[in-house]
Figure 1 (spheres, rainbow, N blue to C red):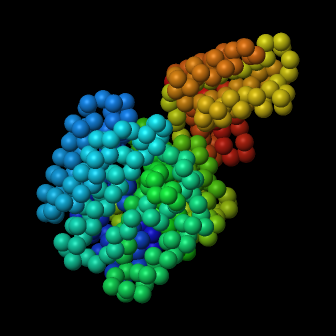
Figure 2: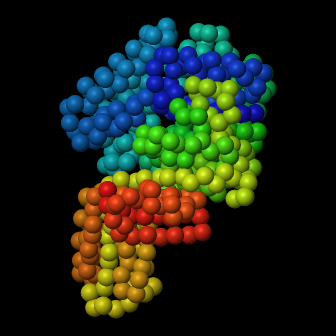
Figure 3: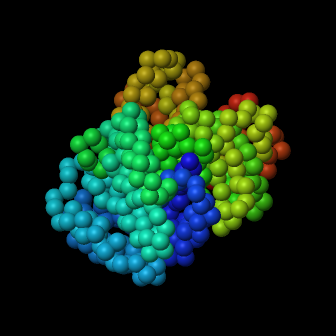
Length: 419
């Protein structure tokens, strides 16, 4: 049993879908569960539809028409019927004809969750046309979450029960060994659609792999494996042949885009190897992520850059020490505003945090802190994280830029620098 995950870039057009078929055909007589993302930039396009609908803007219908045209063009290129697309487009049109829910995130999930349903419908139709036996499953009926829209918390027991149940049914049918389904989406027990967070299809695939005790999971990407830096910004990137679960979690947490941060935990709990491979060159070995210790991993320096950061320094107005009570109140405000910290550090009378420069959240935080604390900030910054660093590497990356904050552990250094 193998679980595959194909992202948006791997199914962005007709030729990409044909390439997926070629890859799947290379695994005859292997039981597969295949998880697909929405095609290309469909999630972004559906976000625009959702925003227009929720705000009551008349552009929602025109924005949806663009989504429809894009997918119909792919369908025509693949030679499959329009119905594979229109069945879902018509459902979205019905949704946006109604009054949106009062909660923005609930309305967002109601619209955006259709991207994966359209892509799997199209891909399934193409596989049927090419006599490739498979089952098409609805992930909304398999991955069950709470009502935390846009970042659903998985009900692991119910999810496992549903996945193993449908798996047993498929085995009894013995008609095929391939099941395809959607990433990124699930639903509540009462059937309301919930998404798992942006780029959450990796996490979905890991959930299926965990529930099925898969022999391995493969994420198919447009890169040869996990690279030590983003190839968009570095010309001399190096592929990491193997890395530990711990290294993968650390890199994902710090912002590496190759793997969703929640992916590793369910795989690690059942000791399932994860491979990251190129969908351009599926025969190449890629990167293996498994239960290695640090000595067994490739300790190649890895670089992660997060732009548009703001450094905020918070001090009590009475010059008292930053104590547990202060930190308790500050963290309470951060939780209330749903602010994720990328870095933090405190001294005797100051507590510094680094976060994404979201002007609305930053301004609201300043307002709430203003009565009890003095607040200083610098924006337009970049957070640089280096895993397996040395001083030569730090000097090379920082160059002539000013370091405003630095934090080191045994294996990782984080630097807040002028961008």
